[in-house]
Image 1 (cartoon, rainbow, N blue to C red):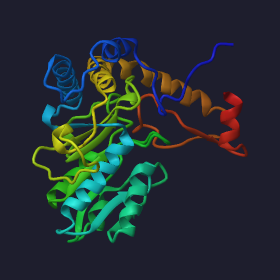
Image 2: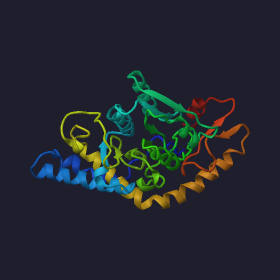
Image 3: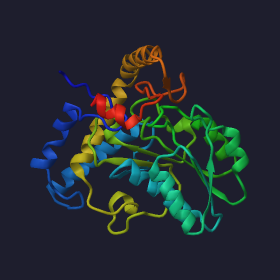
Image 4: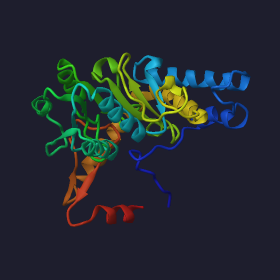
Length: 312
C-alpha cells in the first residue's frame, strides 16, 4: 500500500531544486565565508544572495535577516535578546499560552532570572483576544510575543491587530511565524512586528536553517558570542549549504505561494467536511481562520497517540 505523508506541519520534504542548489556547497564551493580568497568569497556571495531571497519572501530588507539554525533558536534569540537589551527599561514580558515550547520555556527561563511574565489565555478555537493584550500591558512591559499560527490546531492569530496595539504603546513585538512564512502571505510592512522567527524546513527547505527578521534599528543582545558572522549578532561559521537551500526554498515559495494555497485549501476543506460526518470526530481550532493545509481533529474515546500509530 502506498504511504501518504500528511504531517507537513512537522516538516516538509526537501524540494529537488533546493537540493540541486545546495550540492555545490558540499562538493566544490566549501570555502569559509570569512576567508578573503576565492573559495571564501564565493561562499560569502552565496550567503548574501540567499539573504536577499529570504528577505524578499517577507518583504524585508536583506540587512534585516539574521540566519540561525532553526525556528527554536530564532525564538530564543528574539526573546532573550530583547529582554536583556531592554531590561533597564522594564522587566515585564507578555506571551500567550498557545506558544511553541521554545517561546514558553524561554519565558519560564527569564522568569527564573527575575523577569515577570504574563501568559495570555485563548478561547475555545485557540484565538487570542487583542483586548487581553491591551489589558495586560503595564509600564514595565518591554516585549510581547504572540505566535502567528498554531502548528497544533492551525488557528491563525490576529497578529497584525495585536502588533498595532503593541506598537502604539512603544513596545517590542515578536511573532513566531514558523508555521506561516512560505505558507501564507507574511509582509513585514503589514504584520506590525519588530521580530519574526521562521525556518526553511517549513517551506520545502533544509533542516538546520532558520532566520530571524530584526527590524532595522532594533537593539538586541546576541545569544551566541564569538566571531563577526551575521554582523556580529550570531557568531559561528555559517552553514553555507543550508543557508543557500533556505534562499532557494524562499525563492520557490514566493513564486508558488498563491498557487499552493489555491491547491491545498479545497483539499483541506474536503477532508474536514468528510471527517466531521463521522460520529465523535471534532475539528480543533478555528474553522475558517486557519492555515490552508492544516486539519486537526480529536476523536472521543480514542487517544490521539493510538490513532496516530494506527494510521502510520
